Amino acid sequence: MFNKGTMPFTSVEDVKAKLATAGYLASDAVATTVYLASELGKPLLVEGPAGVGKTELSRAIAQSCGAELVRLQCYEGVDESRAIYEWNHAKQLLRISAGHDEGWSEAKSDIFSEEFLLPRPLLSAIRNDGPTVLLIDETDKADVEIEGLLLEVLGDFQITIPELGTVTATQRPFVVLTSNATRELSEALRRRCLFLHIEFPAAELERDIVAMKVPDLDDALADSVVRVVNALRAMPLRKAPSVSETLDWARTLVALGADTLTSEVVSGSLGVVLKHNDDIDKARTKLDLDAVLS
Image 1 (cartoon, rainbow, N blue to C red):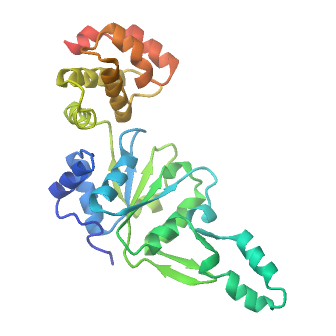
Image 2: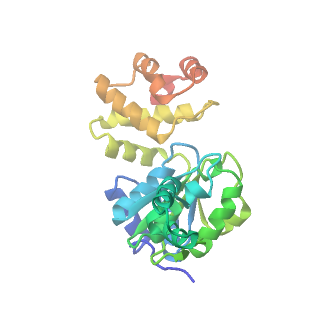
Image 3: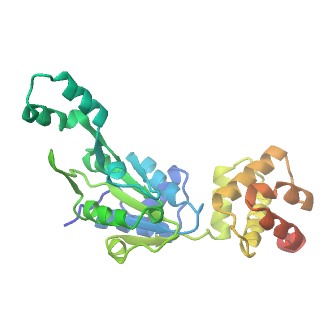
């Protein structure tokens, strides 16, 4: 059984239109997968290089649908107390200290109540009565053990708190898991999700993104920026420039008052686009700017 229509999308085109209002230009593949995840009530697993808009997609879905965004940032060592809930131990100790003459049974029923519960992202999303987007960001950075925890929560959209009982979602959140593929996620987790791989956008779409995000940049210069960025991505670099770095470079050129991309402008601002010195050296020696812009 699934909760059809997790988000108020009526079609693939409606997804594209709504995301555009939030400043996210989605490809047909992205819009289609988002629509299907909503209609089927399935979590959406999004993989791809860093900086292609995986996290931004979640924000855009939440913003365009008037939903609350609840984010679990994964990292090595994240556990149940950071992902689901924990008890406010300091407050519990104060409560026990204050009740000098009461028995343990009375104190126990009090300190394991809502007043002393600290909800973490997964519990917060499950308990939320309004429309919610649950972002489980960089899932691949968490330990393998966290996946078993996610399977239980995402399978039934409920959480059992031994002292309080089972909390079941009244309105299932739209769930997005992101991964940079630094480690392989389990097949059990993948089976429960719809899968979307986001690559760097096609040049035409990236030009549209630049035009939307940096409207002060001349169209011809925006086209040159996208061409050079794509030429850099074709090089064997330690880290290819992402879409966010394309936008940073576009804003840099506006700040510099540049009218065209000259060798001097490119060489002087490569640190905005490339983040390793050997990549910058490689670009300065091997990038044929005239050929790229011809």
